[in-house]
Length: 131
Image (cartoon, rainbow, N blue to C red; front, side):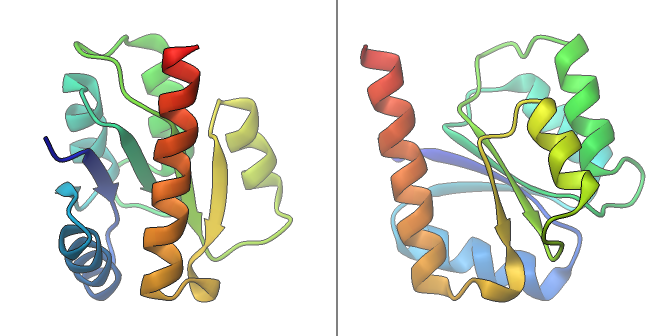
């Protein structure tokens, strides 16, 4: 069964590119175009990995992370990785304190690197689950 990824990204070009690359790599991808939709999908749960943009309409990535802390998903989700164009920013430190696994700088990501990193996070997460 394909591993499920939730992609929360408001930028149409980035969202469609990441979705296509991840689907081509064999992942099942669910997308959300704003923080509110992302929160609702994350609450349903069952995602092996969540890729979360920080700058989103309706509810930003940090607000989404805070809200998830207060509401247990119906089915547990895997790690959350923040997508951002920020480096060394207080937002990233705040997100880390809210439990993200890592942050990826979108401008540094090419499609092959994205797939490689996603596979790494998923493998890491599986090891933690089996230990």
